[in-house]
Amino acid sequence: MPAIISVSEVIPSYQVNQDQASLFARELFADSFKDIERLLKAFQNGQIEKRHFVQGLEWFKENHTFEEKNNAYIESAVALGREAIVKCLHNDSFLKEEISFEEIDAIFFISTTGLSTPSIDARIINLLPFNAHIKRIPIWGLGCAGGAAGLSRAFEYCSAFPMAKVLVLSIELCSLTFQKNDLSKSNLIGTSLFADGIACALVIGDEVRKDSFSKKAAVPFIVATQSTLMPNSLDVMGWDIRNTGLFVIFSRDIPHIIEAWLKPNVIGFLTEQQLELGEINHFIAHPGGKKVLDAYVKSLEIPASMNETSQDILKNYGNMSSATILYVLKRFMERDVSVGDLGLATALGPGFSSELLLLRWQ
Image (cartoon, rainbow, N blue to C red; front, side, top):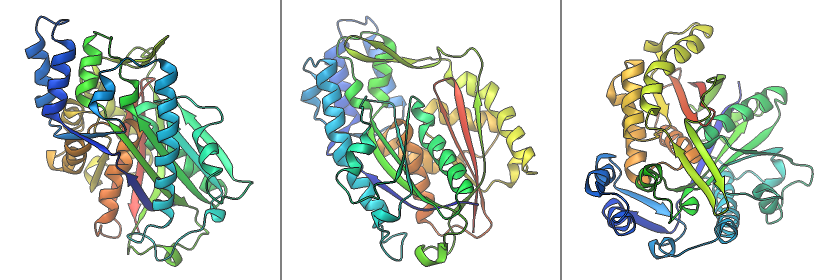
């Protein structure tokens, strides 16, 4: 079983608390919604206290072309992605010694909030001394499910190549997709929820000696994964791509869909592994929002306490799309989790789709 032995995160420079964001939204949207005060309650009810952006609030009050926003995405993604990789490979919280860039066999680059060809991973590779033969696997369009999907694809790669060391690099600059002139309720809700985040995970194959690198007594090994696509659900979440950029599609029915659809999906996955939901010790959930976390509890009938780590990430960072689950995973890896404990990682994204990973600490 491939193992995850290091995770890093990079926090963008501009911190915005939820009161500031609410005032910003009131200023921008007050003339467009007669019930603006009711809608602004989403900023307080979502249990987010602060978020981080790559630009200050004044930047978002100005009009920017798609080109300007995308150039800002490329510039920040390269700088912050480079930093995340360095922190992951030189992470003395998880690693006994630094791992050299030349030892990395592949990079899975995950993003859905900007466009770049050559992709961001290629631009970063030119700044760091990676092997010229490194495999590049850029994955675009999986949204909030992307971080979990990246770990799943890394699991498959390391299962095929057990000597491999691979990186999963997630960069989501959701703020740069903000549409100042989009007067939809989806945009207003997105303004209350989404944030910028960058994270990187190191996954190793079976034949890489974990004890040579890992400081932790137990690390999460990936036992199995499952990807599921819900038929005829293309309109649940995603982007509407127009002349001025990416316009958010965010159905209000997402919590109800989770309640009805997720449990059979999870139970089927665990049954294949000869497990029951009650045997899971840790729930590593992508916190799509307060209602999404509540839907996990209701659908899976798990104790609310199993969501505490995800809730804490949501409170302090907001929804950073694909990067968010790696922030949650990092908190679990920083603890002294008991050998043999089982974790279920789950994330949902456009498609409508789910990604599940079964983890065992050993």
